[in-house]
Image (cartoon, rainbow, N blue to C red; front, top):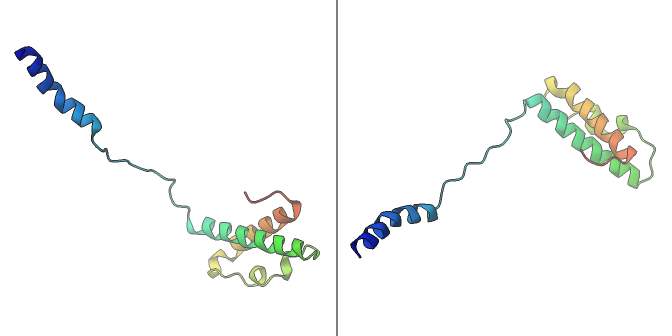
Length: 99
């Protein structure tokens, strides 16, 4: 009887430790540099502009859009934004969907 009680008392902490809530760690990818974020923003804006133009049956022309001509980004990111905008616009017209 004493042996069974001793075994029960020794295993009780192990059982309770297994039932305890453990801290979960979540990891994500490192943040993209700012210029990549501007390129992604341009891609999204271009894709939406392309979808809009397609829904209106307009001919494809990314240069027509104000966001392409005057990007809403800092001066150093204008080329990156325009490149992303153009890629997104063309992808919308090719029907390839959002990446």
